[in-house]
Length: 266
Image (cartoon, rainbow, N blue to C red; front, side):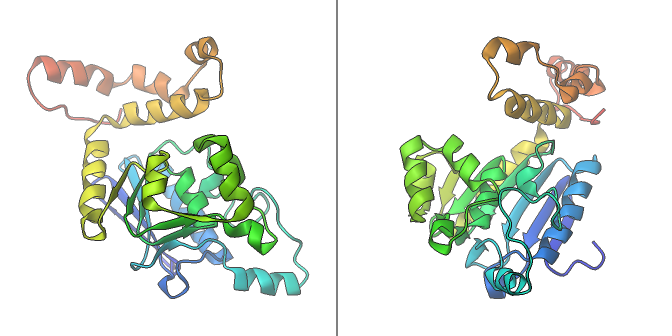
């Protein structure tokens, strides 16, 4: 993407690779990075050749340590109003943490620190794979802040309540094994096997029918808080597209003909 300096963005073989690229500050996210990311997520959604996105941080020390607090301090000193939950009205909105309609799966590749907004990004991804040296936490309570990019709301949904409250209210950190044990991660592997592990997940995602993946993601996330009978009767736009698509016929046809399916995405 022309002019991108905070984020590297590469598309190849149906995969969009999005790399937070400020390793000197542990991939802390400033407003310019958020602006670049918004353009990238727009493109990921719009490009039908992209079937999956992989989000990671540059270097081997951090996925991201979250908000650039030095920038925040300068903005506070300049009289910028304090922020709260969500990013509406701020650069880069809607950020990934609020892109509830993003239909492509996003995989977090985590190596090192995933703290504050970095953990909030990981919580917003559909899958997460981490190295065994990764460290997680929401330190906002210790900084006079709140996990405003969804950490409060997602952690309480993705962990048992008292476990989530323990981490939210104290800012304590936890390791990759703990994150995996509670279901926040799909896999934990040694750092030298991280790319291999991510590649296996990406291969499975890109082999699957793209419209099925989008329909399943939409239905799963939109129905999670619905009563079960309502989930069955709700309308899911991507499922409407999948049901009438060429790919819906291609899968059974390829199975009957004992060959690999060829997905058109239509």
